[in-house]
Amino acid sequence: MKRYGSITGLKPEKADCYKKLHAASWPSVQRMISECHIQNYSIFMKEIDGNLYLFSYFEYSGSDFEADMQKMASDPETQRWWKETDPCQLPLPDAAGRGEIWSVAEEVFHQD
View (cartoon, rainbow, N blue to C red):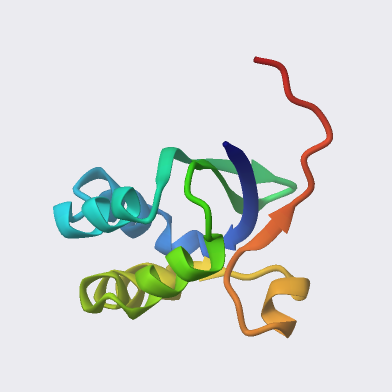
């Protein structure tokens, strides 16, 4: 089991939309997340110095993360979902420089 944490910004004017989307997330997207060996997936929101940030956490139980992420990225329903959620997010500079939304966070502590 590998744990992943990621961070991105959230546009303040899109916060309510983002919450509503996730309050009624699409079953097809949830199935794809599970099919790609992702479990225990959460997204948290926090305001810091007047800016909104999202922190995601999930556990990956598969054996080929890159292939599973490609499978997810190729899924038409997931692509449609991202067209709804991506405009809400405000990537941090490192992610934006790579054309990505989420910045990967380094795990510095874990306790079972």
